[in-house]
Length: 371
Image (cartoon, rainbow, N blue to C red; front, side):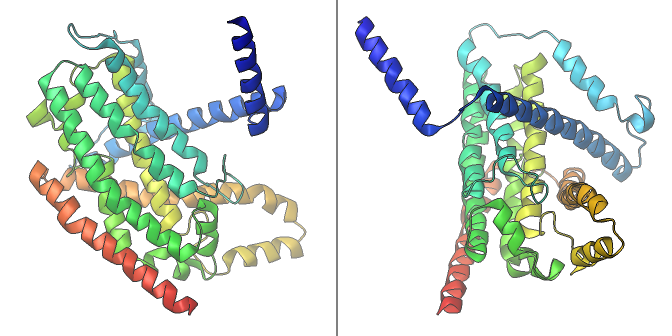
């Protein structure tokens, strides 16, 4: 028995050496540092989005919004997060404790992993994979499993119905979303997020994919709202019908994980709208980057331009992403919730044929241009 264990240990060691996952201790430290930085930055982004949503919603409804916690109420989101962390974690009687506990983690972890392939600038990306967009589509399909596990493990009929609705909605709108991404990949000739942005930089905003794929852009926007479970597509957690859906029995840090996961997903969708359709970190004004770089070289401030360029790239990316965030917040305060049959009909009978037709049309034009 001990010989078998030793042999299996050697095989595992050889396997990991061939994969070259971690070759040195310093690399493992850097990986840990990058991971912690990613988690901190993204969580801070969630706090900012929650504050923005509250202030924009207050402006739409002619209210003041958060006011007292810090300047302009900016610390209110942090206070709410600390309150959730300090609340008691309750596991309902008769529930499946394993499914109930693992569900929120399965929802949040894939969302965090998606940020690995999002470029905020020229070299500001954690993992420049050749299949970056495909990685996002593949890993986001794991999230409905966590929602279904949470609803089933709660031993509550409302939670279970909410989990079933979440899974059905996610499957219905993932397919049009993936078809829109495939159309962009066909135009760009790559699945890498960095390559897709670079190809849109030739003529400034005139070379953005939104002009070449207007139908795909609209389908992508609607599908992204449905994937993020935002109004008018928030059926899985409809408070009036299902008492907050799959989140009904959750409290404390587990509820906070769902809360963070939903806003992280919204931020991911807005960033991918920017990367796929709005030129990413590239400036919208044609030839402006070359003009600024020439001025910096002529006046001897090339080093300061190299320092400021990553900051400008991040600012440009986040500014474009704010457009989608603003649209999603406005739809939450202006549009009524649709019924479950209307939601599924929109996904399967309307968006799916349009997205498929858009993909076939894009493929046909690509074949004609090659010939």
